[in-house]
Length: 520
Image 1 (cartoon, rainbow, N blue to C red):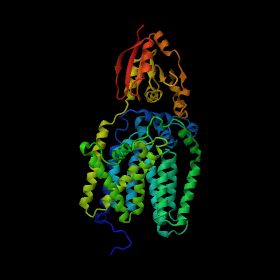
Image 2: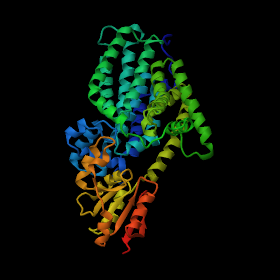
Image 3: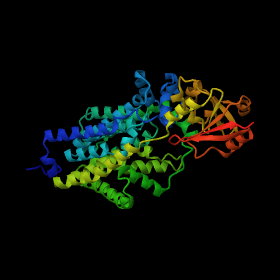
Image 4: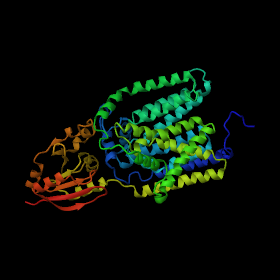
């Protein structure tokens, strides 16, 4: 007979056998790897990935002490180490891809330990085929690493609660290993992305709720947890100064606060299904109901710890990021990505609550197949600004005496990656604030990347009379319009006033290139 104080496991969980479970887990991990690892070098680097490459070239003292690109240095340090084996696109993206596969495994372990096999396998499967997670696992940015760190931190927190709940803790050794896991991964997350502070605040809210009002955590355990987080705060102080500089600077000034309705649609697209056209509103509503039902069902079945953490991540992350955005807009799919951990576990709890193996498998298929379709569509259409083609075109057609004119200075960074080592024409960018041209030089890229927010143009030299000089020697101007809707009208007028007329244009993916030749 099953003990009355032990949550009853579903029939689905009772019937699992270890060989079958291991086989399904290996199949899910293989699927996750198959969606993330192949073809990492096929797509050219886009702007943010070029920032990663150039930041990884910076000297260690600069990486560890400067504010740049709104991100702490850990991811760039790891990429710097990876680039010792070669500076290809595949090498840059390998770390995020491996982190993405590992996160699927960690989610399985969380579900297995705190709910059972059904929850673990369904949660791992849904994260494995999640189009947003696949997307961020295949680009050279820090979001996939951050999600792995947060999954491990959540695993440590859940382990600590499990070891200490119910007033049964005996001394400081209870849950020590789990606390160490949380501490190391939380510190790593804080030095990976600034938004990690918000994620960790929600995880710590779970500890406070476990103490009061749930009454599952004894006061001595709470004191040990608070001391642990005090230590984390002290270790984070060296970067807090940089974070405050970023908050006062221009970080995210290009982003507007998202209206509530649009924010809800972003969350629905992140957690649920995509590309269902007329069925999309019904699918979003069904996914929301299933998520809430999974959290409620998990709590009713005694999986209170897991339901609490999953709910805080799935519901709390987008809400908290949106609220912070009232002061400093930061709401983007990538800044609420940690909510994916909570939604996957919530859907897993919903599957585990079903008593029928057939119903659980049907639910898993109903969730996974549309997500897999969205993911395969993304992989088939995966394309951003094609700087590889743009650099090749300019190298083949532009003469040494020509001028490459970028309508945004930072667009020179991905071009600089592909033009490195080539005999490139002179380059400049239009600076709307000073209404002047700014000289762009390959050797200035590291300084440009590392410059504090709000001082980017200070590392670029004003270039007065550049257009007259080009016209005087019979050179052409190549206007490169990227990351702006169209070339600024003032810039086109200045080109015409300086005696240039448009002769031809090209359009690599998401980039517009136009050649302006002197008319006199």
